[in-house]
Length: 181
Image 1 (cartoon, rainbow, N blue to C red):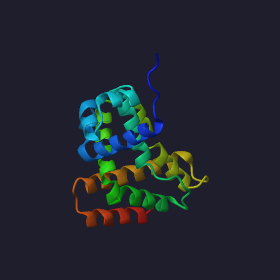
Image 2 (cartoon, one colour):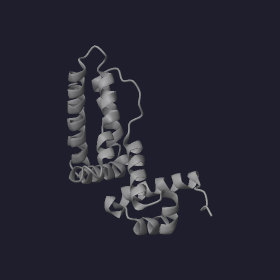
Image 3 (cartoon, rainbow, N blue to C red):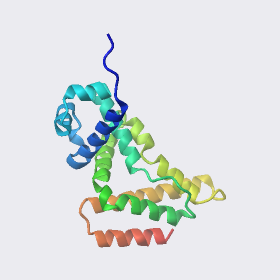
């Protein structure tokens, strides 16, 4: 006898709630029982919708990548792309989701085999947008190096901001950096 079918709308709701919970309470809270309790469902409900803790974690990481991603659009130049990335990522409404991103990223750096997919995709969209913003006439290797520098700098500034650094100083530094592009 087959189990009841998965309600994909409900699964999406649970997934969004799980990401919100992890963003609010931390990456360490991604085990089934505490997650189920926080979401007001049973662990069996989560297993029904996701299959296992590992598959729930994979789904949460996928949704996290979606939430930190910048809407793809063409940018007139590297500076405009960097400013858009900074505005998106430094928005106070996204602080929780970016704190979760950094928590996951830190875990991934410590256990790269367990988070290989996450690490492989952690900057591909940004890199592509930043490379495209430089135009097709730029040497592809140079465009990739510049994109890497922009991502590393903005991530460092964002980490400082999320860690409680002086917002005015950090935003001014971001403005100085992006103006120089």
